[in-house]
Length: 151
Image (cartoon, rainbow, N blue to C red; front, side):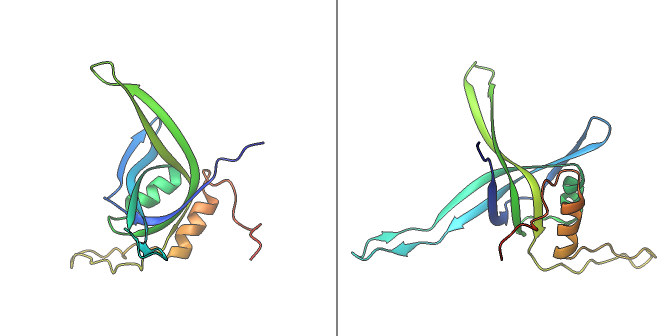
């Protein structure tokens, strides 16, 4: 038996790039930064802060949520799987890309107030972090709803 499970808590590096493929299926991609704080060892050696960048891929309903609500700088909690793919460039050099395919997402940044044009009668569409989690857990992409957590 093997497990391929990733949990990330980080900040969105740029607004999601959302495309629609095969019968209007949404796919969103964006970078996510996770940072380990720097520290000092007992002998006085300084270990600097370290930031890792992750390539995030989100499909279907979660991708549509990303398109509407996720912006650069937002803090996200993501669960998913690591997948590595390769391609050959024009010179025939093989490149490898490691991506995180998201199964569950929680938005942790406080919601921003949405400004409506004065002549618009439509209500602003907002989502609370708990609402995004509900969307994620009800999405066809979500594999588990976290009810088996021991705490």
